[in-house]
Image 1: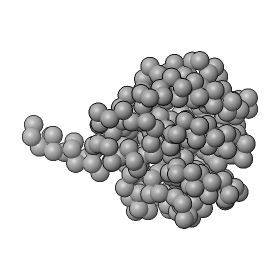
Image 2: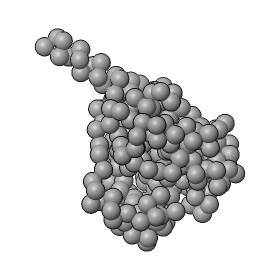
Image 3: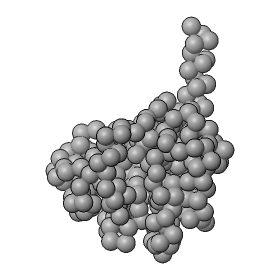
Length: 243
């Protein structure tokens, strides 16, 4: 039994993705994927500024290359920037060489503002992808423990209630300031997400502080989870471009 515990401890340490932080402090991390977007990212930044909240933006390299001024603006506002690969391809379906290209090209597009944080597109990940991430210098691969499902057809009240019901100290929330792919073009509108986020920030004012992922990691012990997620071919076949 002792060696079994050691095995799982080592495996979590080597392969685990960070899903939250163990802390009693009333802090949480808002994370936004798939940007930057010329319309919605500035609206997210304005909303965060009104509430004194900091966040982490996991940016697609191709988008960052198109809108470098937005990358600078996000960094200047005190938010963290992480790598969401070059063009949002599922990492599990690529060769090792292609995966490393996705990570390195994404990092180059974010320089000099990108932190050594990686979030895999769609959450698709496995052991081989973890090894390639390690080769590219990513010790922290960031997942989440609170999904707002803002890429589907949910109204702001539903999404706000989900945040308020499930948030805990140390939570990492998954949101999107853009959608690289979508099941329906109408879902690309970030208006409902922005309305939900504003309502949640209003309700949580004075109760929670929202910090960047690097700041959250300094608040306690990272909680790791073995993360083996592969794409559902039927789901992937339904996706359409969102940007």
